[in-house]
Length: 143
Length: 143
Length: 143
Length: 143
Image (cartoon, rainbow over all chains, first blue to last red; front, side):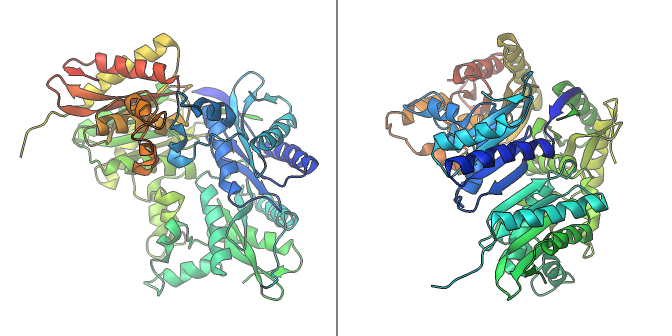
């Protein structure tokens, strides 16, 4: 056996508050999801004007980023222009999301903790809000 | 066209806080989900020791109660002993949950607003926590 | 954040060897699966005469036992005779397996590590083989 | 009726050991899957730092290569630049994987035996590890 770090619900709430504050600041209601290192949902919220199709997109962005340990944009860039992993987006029952907005969450010593994903804005806005969530929690970073 | 009442994220947060407080009071970490009148997830949280298999059960209880406008226990009772709706539990891709713990949310003048579902305790405990969520918001009731 | 114990692949291989030895001893080729605390597959093997329909049954037994932190038989007993959680078996996209043969894996100080599931024999035989897997690893127990 | 060659679990273990040794040699923990001629999982293992999103990708690469009797890279090349089979990647419920890393396994006299798939590295690394698995078993080859 080995010992690993895990996010608590309290940690997830701290990130959610940071993400929500940023979404309000830029004026875009978002669906926001946080998953643990096993890809399992910890916390989700849909702001009042967020899209309903973005519920699963936000959850899948968090799942993909946490599970693959890269931003969803990283994979999106890799598949475009006939890139080497084109097709990866249909894996995991179509849950492998390659649209920007999902970020992995690492401890400062590089252990994977999970992922955060946002949807309803542009991929850049979604990423900005996810990043704000990560910034709100001390001891973690993203790539 | 018609006018309908809709839950806000603020309303859902009020219910979530009430449910979480009750879960802590009875000492059972739960997965707790709230959906709107379209069956779409508004808010979800998993307490630290809640079961991961209960993530989708909580969401499906909220979905079923809000969508069918009855408690999930009501349907569970109806299907037992070869009851008249036996088989309904496989509908909606198996999401029609007939285990107690899901409650519909109505306005005081009987408009459906959505559902709340809890999972990780016994069906009675799950129902108690969902009920506490509804009790925390004024202007709504359940059946 | 919190610190938790995690199974290594080496741990899973030790359990798999114990389970396989027991399956051979009782003369039943089995599908055997081990998942981690997030319900994600770590190790799987199908013995030569094991059933192909039992591939996903074994995986789902491990998923259910690890995720719900109880044996799959425990849930099977609870749903029979119009029991209180009848219907739970359609949850998690039908993956919530209530057939005996899946066991949760805990550290000796009660942290959940995952689950092991077997299929191709009777539920009793499947459980016996899963138990042998757990017995093969020191520092863990099941309920 | 006809006689066909079939992989045994022992054969699959030999390939798995060869693949694992290569993954260690290049320093990338991988998810590694082997399926039979029916596309059904025989053996799977996830090395400690392999990605959880790569569990189903590895299984689907093995499934695709064994079922379609071509490497997954072959299909990836065919669909790029608006190639003739564009769209095939969404078939089989999205399981038709066109990312390199899956190889078919043939007997030396050209009977299909199944497939092997790896995921967590680059497509080239994944393919290299799958190839090492096939090289470890005598009497078989890939294309």
